[in-house]
Image (cartoon, rainbow, N blue to C red; front, side, top):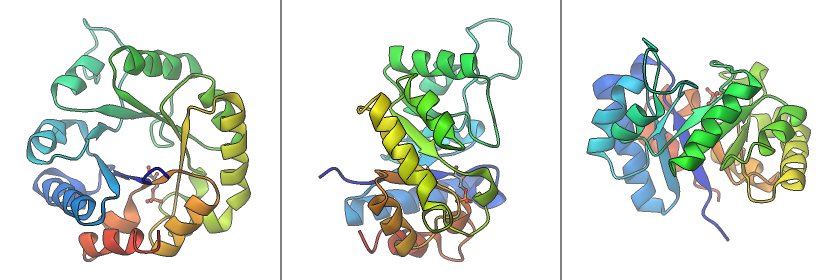
Amino acid sequence: KQTPLVILNFKTYLESTGEKGRDLAKALEEVSEETGISMVAAPQGADLWRLSREVEIPVLAQHIDPVDAGGHTGSMLAECAMAAGAAGTLINHSEQRMQLADIDNVVSKMNSMDMTSVVCTNNIQTSAAAAALKPDFVAIEPPELIGSGIPVSQAEPEVVEGSVAAIKDINPQVKVLCGAGISTGDDMKAALELGSEGVLLASGIILASDPKQALLDLVSKI
Ligand code: G3P
């Protein structure tokens, strides 16, 4: 059986920015080493280089723009993210929605650059559409539960199960993650029982008084 995956989206919390982001990435690395569970950090773009230098765990960008090299001031270029040490990127997060053709553009670019693509979706239909684009992962996150502390695995288990079924039906190679409101060992266990292969989460760990302990709790029931 494959080791479940934990991706921590650092978002733009001050608790996961700059030096504090470094500490959080170190906590992820330590818990990964101590438990054998794969942990991945997704910091802000400006922190990619620093974190990728300082930890051995994979680091993902939170977003890459669907642009080629040239005149695109303010954009995140895939080649720049790669040079900064990113192993891949989140795509189409609820807080950074993209058009379908642009999602396809970035997934294709990740595939051609041998980088990891994690397409976020909001329901069963968009999960199915995302799977058709051949990303490495689809992460289902009902937007209304993001940051709520109410776990998707409890509030909308049918969306996770339905997404897993729809995604595997279209492309069995695509791995499925779920997220929104996940913070405890019970939440993670339930997410895996619903057929997901890991979790994408943020506030439950980032805002915890002791993030390392929160990570240890998260994986304690697997
Ligand atoms: O990308 C992870 C995310 O949107 C879930 O956020 O704070 O509910 O874990 P949170």
